[in-house]
Image (tube, rainbow, N blue to C red; front, side):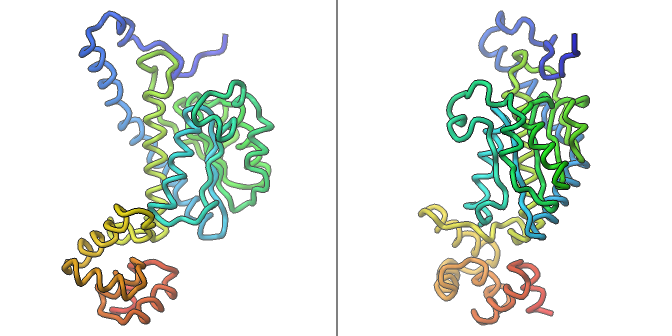
Length: 297
């Protein structure tokens, strides 16, 4: 019999979970969850390489593809969906592919993860500059295998994110981000510790990529899309936090910049005219810190 991956083994700490009081049961889940950040921390050196590869790809006109099935694919879809409103990332630059398609977000699509051919088709048209990140807690999902094989064939960078140090799909990947979270509280329920690890990896990866691309100034968003009242207010708050100017001064700067945050920010921090702020941003490829340094040098 083939050895079970860590995520499928029984957890000796929770064999009596069905006998516990509700509070003790929750303590058992919480204690297991507390193991996840350390597992992710051990994977950060490899994840840093993935971030650098993705930044190079996006700078070079390439794309990043998330590929997954079940919970893994759903986490990927959620992470990719947040990048446009939060960081102004253009559609298609980081794309998520979920086995079974959009319908699989709300309900299981039986057998969808078993097709390598579907995984290959999901990332059709890859270029060598692209990056494919396959997410599979057990490290053996056929749909992800197909996508990684397609990446390898196209000369693109292939990345596996799994919770198994001996993941079979690691042989198809250039980089293996392994978060060994061990057995789950409920055997095989990889939406738990494994899922939490994958969410942390995705959040860390996409945040680091956006920072490296200059989509922030300090720890403030500079590309936030003001698509509702809350986000319109956030633009003003960001300007106040970044510059120390009063709210009315920041509102005036936003009006002078046609509501765009970055030229308003550059203007307030440098004293430049709106036109000079825009010119500096254009020369700096939209990176606020570079534009400010150029204007103040």
